[in-house]
Each structure stands twice: as C-alpha cells, then as structure tokens.
Image (cartoon, rainbow, N blue to C red; front, top):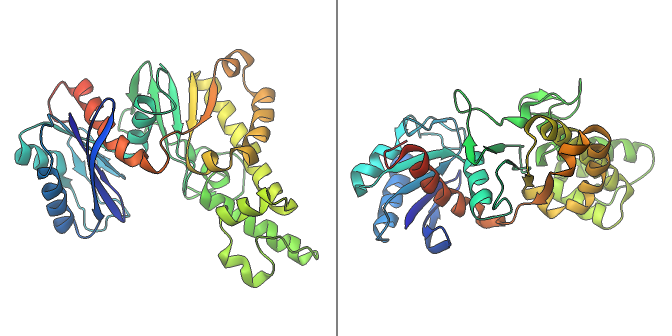
Length: 315
C-alpha cells in the first residue's frame, strides 16, 4: 500500500492505494507552505499501512534531492525538502516528481497507456506538458527537463505558449486556442459575421477554449475553423514525436479528451501525410482515461516508480 500526495496551486489531495486503485482520499485547499504541509501530515496520519509515499507537484523541482523549488503557482514553497520531511515523519521512503511526468506514470500504470513499452503523455490543458515512458521507464533526461514538447517551434509566428510565439503549446493548448479564437472572432466580426462564441468585440475577453468548443459542436463555422487549425498543428507535432520516439501509444488529456472529434480527424490527415508510415501504423493515439482523478493516481504512481527507480531509498 502506498500514500500519494498531489500538490496543486489551489487544492491538495492525500490518497491511499495500491496497484489496483485508490481506497481512501482527503482533499483540502492549498494555502501557505507551512499550513499546507501541516494539513498534508495530518491527513497522512489518518491513513495506515503504507510503505512508501509519492508526491506530485508542479515544477521547478529537484527530483533526486526531493526539493520543491519555488513553483510559480506555489509562492512561498522555496526549496522545500519535502521527501526528507515526509520520511522523517513516517519512517518510509518518499519520492517527488513533476506533475506532467507523474501524470504520464498514472496513465501508463492505471489508464490508457497500460501495457505499453513506449508511451508519450500530453497534458493538452492550459498548457502543453508531456511525459515520456521509454523502454518501460520514465525518461527524464540529464536535468529532468525531457519531454518539454510544448516548447517546440511549429511556425515562425503564431499564438504564444511557453514564452514562444508559434510554439507547439501556442497552437495546442487552452491558452493557445483562446488566443486563436479571439483573433478569428475579431476578423469575423469586422467582416460582418458574429460567431456564436463571441457576438461582438466587447465579448472578446470572455472567449475561452471551452466556449469555442461549445460553439463548434453547435456548428459554428468560425469555431470549427479554430479547432481545425489546432488539429492540424497537433497532427504536425504528433508526426514529429512519432518519427523520433516511435511510441506504441500517445495518450492525450484534457481538451483533446473532451473535444477529440473536433481535433483528431484533422490531426489524423496530417499524420498520414507527414509521419513515417510504419511508425504511424504501430502507434495508437488515444484519449486519457483518468479524467479529473488523474492527479490522485499520479501521486500514487510516483510512489511505485520511485521504489522501482531508487530501490526503497528517497529519490
């Protein structure tokens, strides 16, 4: 039995589970580092029988040292030695992993990537994070930054993501879809068309990836065009990943899972045109399975992966 701790910018969860699933969970708000750590420890003490702890948290962090290093959404978490704190408190090894890699481990162990030897996980949420499973192991690279797929240059210019206009994240993320949707809406309105998701220029600030998707599902041509362009860029990015990594499966979460039919047909056309056919034919592209519970399973998966990688010693 393992304990999983998912530390988010607004919420935290402490879960108890094993390789079959989760059996108990406590959830609370993320506040200051001191208060949140006290809540985490209190919640963990309410569970018993665990022999390892996994922590999933947004970066930057140092996985080997078990340090949370001032993530932008955790303002006073400065060089927090969380694995040492937890090991001293509970007498079991604790392991830390960034949230994108942890989610990759979760989908690989519990979700849509089960049984794969080589898997890519793409978050496709507010941003475009990724995690790589290669030859049956999480691949992190020389300094833990492997898989920063959102930073790939896709065009000379375009929506901004990862502080780079025209990046993969710029084209394929909630933030990127919002930028593209606002540009498309403004052009449509100035030419006499009022998209369902943005009837006037004063509505531009309220445009979101969800409002565009809702309009696209309802048949709005401007919204469909925004998602079509996103799907085509997704296909370009996936073709590159298929050629370089040659994965068994690519698991894509969040927006893709909710709006697959708006994106995948266009991505599929590009992949068929651009990727190596043998590699594309042996790669499944699937929606993530764990949905809103992925953070809980991610933290649990970190505990099992840490035990595998570090043999019962803190990461």
